[in-house]
Every structure is written in C-alpha cells, then in structure tokens.
Image (cartoon, rainbow, N blue to C red; front, side, top):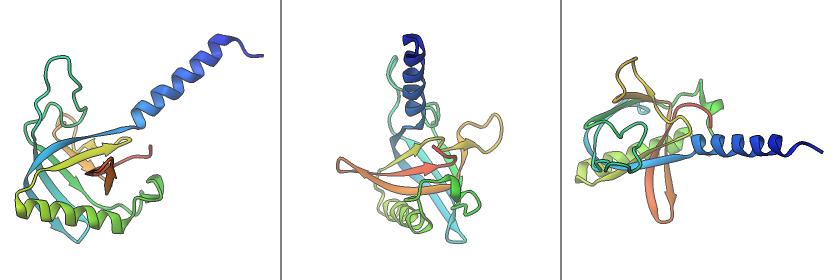
Amino acid sequence: MRPPHLLGALIAGIVCASATAGGSYESVEIKSLRITDRTDYELVVAPLRRPEPGAYVDPYMGGCTVFTVRGTYSRLHSIQLPSDVTREGHLAALAHLTEAHSKGRVVNLGWVGRGFVPAQPGTPCVVRSRALHLLTERGVTSVVSFHDAI
C-alpha cells in the first residue's frame, strides 16, 4: 500500500496538468486578417473584455489592447497536435475568420494546451500558432489555436 501523501501528490499533479492543458477564449474584434499560401496568416484582433480586479485574466490576451497572431498549419509539427486538428479544419477556421471580418462580427479566439508562443522574447502580444481549429461547445463557436502538444 502506498502512503497517502504520495497518492495526494499524484492527484495534485494530474489536476495541475489538466488545468494547464485546458483552454480559454476571449471575444475579439478582428482588426485585420491577411492570408497567404492558403494556410499562413496574420490575424490582428482587439480583445473586447477588460479584466476586472481579481477576475480571471487570459494568460495570452489579458494584458493586450491589440493581439497579433502569426500562424500557419505546420505539418512538421502536426504529430504533436490532437488527431482532430487537421489542415482542413485549419482552413475552415480561416474561412470562419474571413467571413466574420468581412461582416464586422465579433469572434471568440482562444487556445488549447500551449496555444500560442511569443514571436520574439519581450513581445507577449505578438504570438505564433501552429494550427487553428473551430470548436463548438455548449452552442458557442470559437477559433482555437494550438502550438504545442497538450
């Protein structure tokens, strides 16, 4: 039989790992969207929610008035992506963003796992993404970014 403190540490580790693998989204206004080579894009958005003191702050967009995503669908790194995150799904997410931008609609932009990484050190509001995916949960559709494995 294992000591109770080892079991507690194991459960705590699983809970912490699950929390960092989770995701979130923010409602954003699309300022610009430029797509090149079908899968490469630069998306510039303005998050609409301003965090209140003591409230949840998105770790990526929470401190940004303008948030820029430079991304692609990376086949080289696609092995690290969940199996349902595909090139076709990435293209569908870009089509969703294109339509929303052309109609001036607000979209939900989010992340799963380590969804974004800074493009350069010291530039937290300019990030890279390896894949986009349309996700609908409880009737809410979001475009979510993946960068590294969950």
